[in-house]
Length: 370
Image (tube, rainbow, N blue to C red; front, top):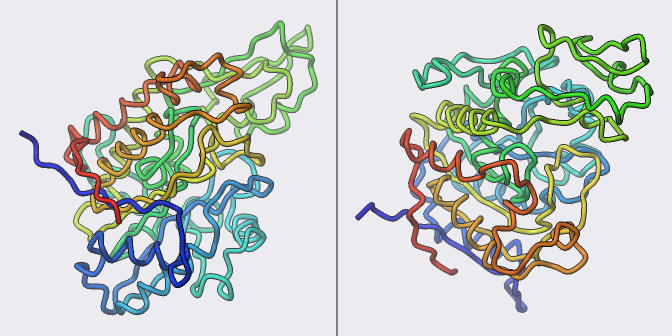
């Protein structure tokens, strides 16, 4: 029988003398974070600062609690994320830092500095040798690659490309430089549904590679020799014309994310926390967040990111769906796989299966309530 990884869970019930921040610290200690030697070590706390307008991201208060514990244990923490591939408000370090501050991630609130891992324009990275099926090396943002210890704090939610987003998505895709993100996205390129196109040119103006032009009928056309598959056209299209073509490329992207996660944590002490709250249908990269699909459930922590993500998926799938959410619109039936219902063209298990295959962890876990 495969050895089980321990995943620790705390619910959101509180009492006098034990608020949610105190419960988070208790969870981390019970999960064994003190086993790591933090003394004088640079500690990258990998988090998503949230696209401004999206309110589902992890509250800075939780980050501050992690920072305080790391400092108490002798570490030198900093919060970090890498720039986005699409042209939003986190595509360069100046805008990214402003967005982080706007959402409350500043030294006064969290007790440490924010460092954008891949520099001003997303070109500051270390090439980490991994020798895997898709990637021989991974382009990891320098601040994360140079850190001595990695802690991930992940908002657990649905995701259009991988079915769900948790520790693996946060660490893999989130730590890649712009070139790394291009590598992970490269097999997933959007398509234009011409009958939906109204010729508004939003996709043309937003394409970072000038890969989209208008044809004689004033319809958008993609030059796939230039397209990097970033999905920015999909994000800005208001008429459901620019669409992601979900096929085998989705599996490939999930596997590349697992390989990049391996590059981030190999040879380093690492620890992971999933916040199963505001479980929105889509990624925090959108500048909005739709109604949660289930009630707020709690917080999980583990040294094993694969077991952690699997336990999070299972807990959400075992929970009653919230009425009025997107699941209801899709005709979801109780007992169905929620992430499969949300993003039916994506096989969310692909990333977990491959992560297990390359030795990132196991999907066999023991859930321990704190």
